Every structure is written in C-alpha cells, then in structure tokens.
Image 1 (cartoon, rainbow, N blue to C red):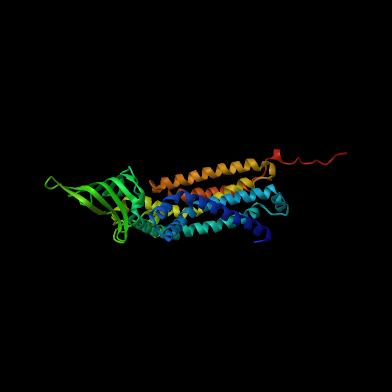
Image 2 (image 1 turned 180 degrees about the vertical axis):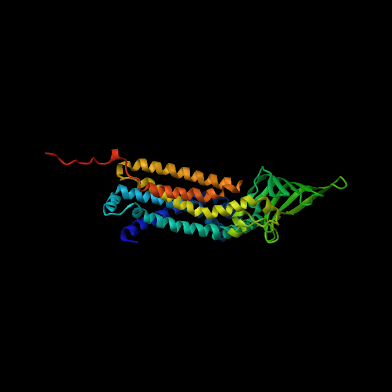
Length: 374
C-alpha cells in the first residue's frame, strides 16, 4: 500500500470507528433503559449491568458496522473531492480502481470482523445473554411489577396491586397462581410488602384470604389469614430447558437443524435461512462500498456535482438496505430465495465497480480545440 493509499485508508479507519461508536452508543441508549432500571430500583450489582451491556455489543456491531463503514467511505471521498485532493491524485495517474483500493481494503476489514461476529461471537454472546436475563428476571422480578396492571411474572402467575408506595409497600393485592392446573390458587390482601431475599423475590401479604379451587370435586376452599407469603422465583435457569433461539446457534446448528426435535422441524426454514443470512452479510459490505464509489468516482467528478452525487448515494443505499431486509424476510418463508442472498450483493458490487469506469457524457466534457487552418 503506497503513501496515498495509506493516507486515505487512515481517514477511512478513523471515520469508521467514530461513526460506529456513535451509532452503537445511540442504540445502546435506547435498549438499556430497562437494564438501568434493574440497577437503580432493584439494587442489582453494577457488574450485572455491565455484563449485560457487553453481551449485547456483538449484536449492535453487526447492525452498525456496515453502516459505519459506508458512511466513512461517503464522508472521506466527499472531503477529498471538496479539498481538491482527489483531483490531484487523479492527475498523478491513479485510476478508478487505484482510488477505490483503500475503501476496498477497509471493506475487507469490516467484512472479516462481521463474519467473525456473525459466526462465532454473536451466538456465543446471545447464549450467555439469555442465561443472564433469566437470572435477572428470577432474582429481580419485583422491579418489573407495575401498579394498576396485571403483571405476568410467569406463564402461570399473575400479580396485580393498586398502588406501590415507598419501601415497596403494596395495596389492594391480587395474586393468581396457576402452576397446579387442577388446584389454582387466588390470594387477595389489603396490603403487602415486596421483599428480595436470598431465595428470590417474595410478596408478604397481610389481612387477606386464600382461595383454592379443587376442580376434580368442584369445591372452593377459602382460608383467611393475617400474614401470608408467596415465592415469585418461578424461573430457575439452571433447571429449565429451553429451545435455542436462532441467534443463539452457531452456523452448523442453523444449516443442519436437529430434525428429531419437533420445534426444529417447525422452524426448519427459519433456521436454515438465518444461517445463509449470516454467510451473506459480509457481501453487503462490499456492495455498499462499491455502490457509493461507483457514484462518487464515475466520470470526471468535481465539486459542483458533489451535492447531486451524495443525494444519489443516499438513495442507492436506502434501496440496497431495503433489498437486504426484504431478502432476509423472504428467505425465512421460502428457501428457494436463498441464492438471491448471494447474487444480489455480488451483482450490486460488480455494477458499482463498472460504474467507476463510466466516462462523463460528451456534452459535459471540455470542448476539443481544432487546429487553425490557413
């Protein structure tokens, strides 16, 4: 890589890091409010919050890295044109592919990182994130209970209370426990107290009654009490068996689902499509970069046309992003569409590379001077 290429590549790398960091931070802020609430209201340790944020980072990076890299290409080459540096580089004999080489090198780096994230880091982080999320829901479930609403603590437990006062004091409490389908229990109390113990969250209720329905005999049993406690720790991650979601699976598990598992059979198309989407994702990095380069470097260029070129670049990128999302959705219902996952970004990249060599229309070129005749 010569000095010019290193100069352009350095600016591309800096711009990619800055844009990606800003986008990751913006997404993180929108997704982390619930996690912050666990720390502030639930007295959860700060390390738990940081660990959850770290485990969510690969998914954020997969989303924003291609956007950050193409934004860096657009910004860097626009600045080179605005400062007339691109004109000087052209005048030194560098052709379109020479101009594009730093951007392609940056795209190769981003595509490699994206491939590692998609095939290894994301599923690994997703597995740990799910386990830790279940632990949070189990140990800090009281944080997510809302007053005046029926809160589903679990599929079989519903909690309602009218008001939540200071020190986690509750009023007008109703708890329905349907873990034993033959003998569902409903507990009603005038007031209660939310507590987080070493054994998990509990509700201590005062001055109420416990109603248990015996469906076999059709009899309602009622017990009045002065004090009663219910354990809300209904999720035990270490004992509970879960079906692995697509984002928790490595490539081999996606492309070759376990056909002996009924849920894998039902989700066969989704799993296989997810595997191919991960393999095709790095190709879109080159498609985005070459599409932008095809618009910015075609013809003679110049500062006067940069405004129109940037608008065109944005329009092209919007269309490509829509095509990427549409193809990802269609393959989840029709595996015959999978070849398009690879064909569309490859053809788009080829079209962008070809556009860089497109000459400027004759009417916009400088007039050719004819020699004078005697």
